[in-house]
Amino acid sequence: MSLSDYQLSIGTTGLVIGAGTDYIVHQWDGAGLPGVRDSDQPRPFAHGNFLGPEFIEARQVVIDLTVRGDDAADCQANIDSLVKAWYFDARPVSSYDQIVDLSVKVPGQAERFLKGRPRKLEIDTSNLKSGKATASLEFVAGDPRWYSYVLRSATLNVTAPASGRGYNRSFDYGYGGGSSSAVSAVNAGSISTPPSMTVYGPLTNVTVTNETTGQSITITYTLASGEFLDLDFAERTVLLNGTASRYYAMTGDWWDLAPGTNTLRMTANSGTGTVAVSWRDTWL
Image (cartoon, rainbow, N blue to C red; front, side):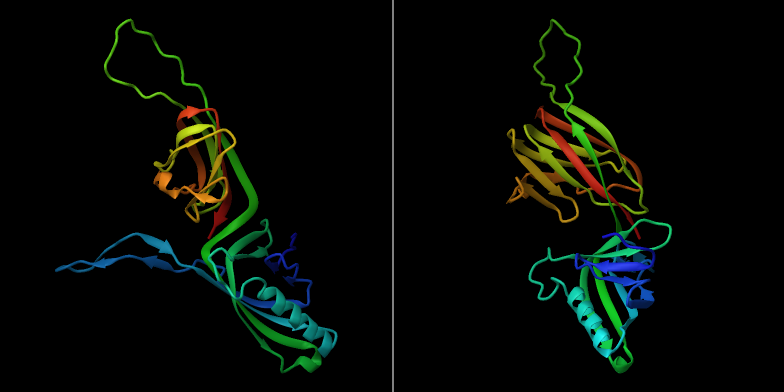
């Protein structure tokens, strides 16, 4: 959906809230920096704490608005549309993958979205007879990052190893073969972003390293021609041909793309397949 400045929408319902609509936003809370979840531990027999890893908490967004209409009946119809959109596919929730987007457009930047669930909608209809009602919406983004709608991508291709120098002397020590290639992946946001990766066969034992962060992920598996593995770095899943889990084949780190330019390198023991990496810019 294409939004104008100071507008927002929920999921794919088509309902737009904000400037130029019958839903006038008065206040928006939760657009700033969320809190930090720390893992500090007290120092035994000493002052202070050991400072552990820190993670950003879920983002809670609260939107206060006025719903208006030409008369009471028109206002009530707009309220009904708001309720239907706000609870679109969100209740009852029976699985972790039932997530919707809260899309927002502010001046000077392209549309961005949060991933989460609507949690509450309160409506005061005491002034309904005048064609107005007030409402308060709550949205919880389990992932606190703002995502760009632009999906970036890069492809790592297998390259033949460089030819070496021949020796007319034998050695009883084996040197690993294989091939590698590297690409640059740019995260234009302000915070690290989790990529997705698809490994296409034929390939055997693939490692993809983010040389910028120094982290690698390895899939110890042989893919035949026509087979592929989908790796979701946010959800931490490995699926063969989009269905069967092959998580057991993964070792190493689920890395992110740091803000700026990241150098990604692929190595494989053998094969002629490719690795496709995709990601979105993210901000706090």
